[in-house]
Structure formats: C-alpha cells, structure tokens
Amino acid sequence: MGRYRAVFDGNGMLAEYEDEELVWLREDYKPPNASDLAKPMVIRDIEPYKNMIDGRMISSRSEHRELLRRHNCVEIGNEKMETKPIVPKKVDRRQVLHQQLADMSDRQANKIIKKALKGR
Image (cartoon, rainbow, N blue to C red; front, side):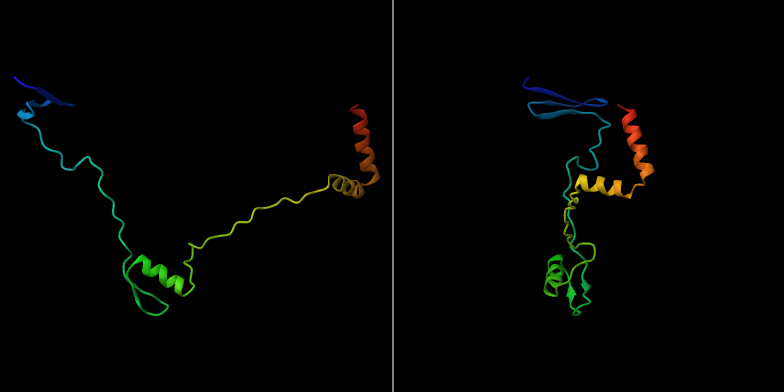
C-alpha cells in the first residue's frame, strides 16, 4: 500500500485516495454549484447617449471626459471644491475686557468688584 489520504467534511469522511488516485467517494456527494473562488468583477462602460452640446453620440467614459474638457463643462456634483481654512481672528484680551467694562454701568461694575473682594 502506497500513500493514503482521507478527506473529511462536516458530514464525515468524503473521499479516500491511494497514491493520489480516488478509490472511494461518499454516495451522497454532490459537487458544489458555484466555485468558492472570487469571481471577477467587471464594470461596464456607460451606455451610449446623444450629447446636448453638439448632438454627437458618446459611447465611452473617455469620450465623455474629453467632451467636457473640450467645451469647458463640469458635471454637477463632481466639481472640486476649494477649501480655505478658517483662521480665527486674534483678539486682544485687554481690548475685549476694556470694551466690556466700558459697556457696563457703575452698579454692575461695583457688584463684580464686591464679589471679587469677598472671594479673597
């Protein structure tokens, strides 16, 4: 007897091989309908359409891009947005406090000063 190999699945022994030759196969075995391997994915090109600019038929994405480029057009929703960072304004703290104190009445200022002195 040469080299022996048994193949098992979830239901028990599936097949037996001797010297790489199949000698026994379970009776209820059915080959799988589809392969477990990944299937290639193919993206279709666009359907041909009549363009609104000059009436010619466009049958591929490259023709579509070329048409847009040639006539300086942009698809709505696909334009590139320029983002500008928001720079916060530099505020002078002294200036802000001075402005707040200038807007206050004497009564409000005295109340704040009293609170500050009580806290010491």
